[in-house]
Amino acid sequence: MKIIRTESLVPGNVTEGEYCSINGKLLIAAGVTITQQYIDSLKRSNIYELYVKDEHSEIRKIIDSDLKNIGELHIDQRSENGSNITEVLKQLGLTVSGEEGYKQLAESHLVKGLDRTLNMGRISDRPIGKAMKNEMQQLFISARPEQYKQEISMSYGLALNEVRKLLTTLAGGSKIDSNKIRSIVESFMKTFVIDHNILLAMSTLKPTPEDYLFHHSLNVCLLTVNIAASAGYSEEQMIQMGMGALLHDVGMLLIPKSIRLKNGRLTNDEWYEIRKHPLLSLHLLDKLVSLPDAIKFITYQIHERENGTGYPKNRPSKLIHAYAKIAQIADIFEAVSSPRIYRQAYAPYKGMEMLIKMTRTGLINSELVKSFLSFASLFPIGSLVQLNDNRIGRVIAANQTKFTKPLISILTESNGQILKPEQIYQVDLSTEIDIQIVRSLPFESVSKDILQGF
Image (tube, rainbow, N blue to C red):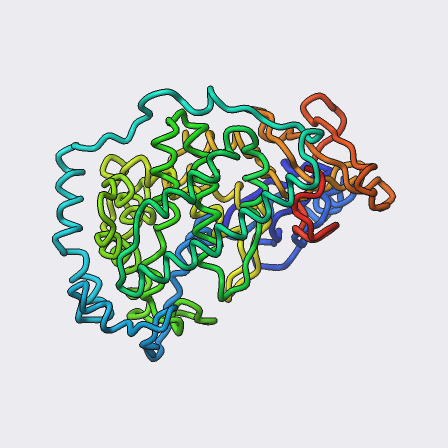
């Protein structure tokens, strides 16, 4: 448990978690606005320290879903497109399940080849060429007619269908043209160079549990190219990273649904089945002709961690490809911000807060998280927030290094009145000294239209 001094509480702040006494008694619930009366009451009761749960262990639980209980491993032998999983696995040379199958994959020739490249330092993963962020423009709200926003939404839907088709085909053991993956990323890049904020907003679209993997892959792609641009990478490098992000979870389609969509704790064997998926992804990508190794490193290392606590190989920072480090951040943020079978979605602010905490514990790269913040803000673009005067707004743009002061479109007035589209107006928190965000709100608090206010 983490100790919080009573004197450090700030009136007006909203609690993110529960504050308890040393013996576990609840003193202040989550979501409560701290008042001076609360603080005075605690002091009168001689309570000078409060306790909150250890955040690091909670984050690891959320990110890795490492929940193990005794249970029975039940395998559904049909893949997403009806192919027999056992046959596809045999094509990959995998004949054993559970921990032994995991070890078998981890020692395959493909994995060893990438490991040799990393160990010898023969990788080029730093920004090379013309930085895309110097070429980018940004549309203002007045330049986004309703038809334009509808076309953006439609392009997302079309891309999602294409991702679903390509990933299920690949997971079924068939070859696909890597140019089809590239064309999806390139289509978004055309929008990205003139309006990256609207793509960040589109990445907040959330799926049904059964459709999670395809939405997740597409959203991680959009987030990855944003982080890469902010970090100074070129257009070609961004395209490669986007392709890797789209493909990174294809191996998960070979994990039985009974495990992947399980609403409960995973057994030890089931956990090893989940940990196989980046290795399975790597083997499936071997069917793509002329696929750059950089893309393979993303699928292989997206679940590694800076301090060597990730999987599949527990690699430390120096042996993790930089492209994978960027995709890691996008993958984590998208995962915690999306609903899962076993939990509700976390508010985007909470997802960003988790990334910051993970840098402090050495799990992910702090400079790349700063790059993400500069494009998305602490209250990510597309999210709903409540201001200290009770107005509710949607974050529509970041303010560079002023991470807590984004540009907001006001959707409701202080009295709760919902504004009509033509009444919506903007507030730049970087210039409004007395106005601040007090809490992040669920996506559908005001409207289901995620582009309202853009």
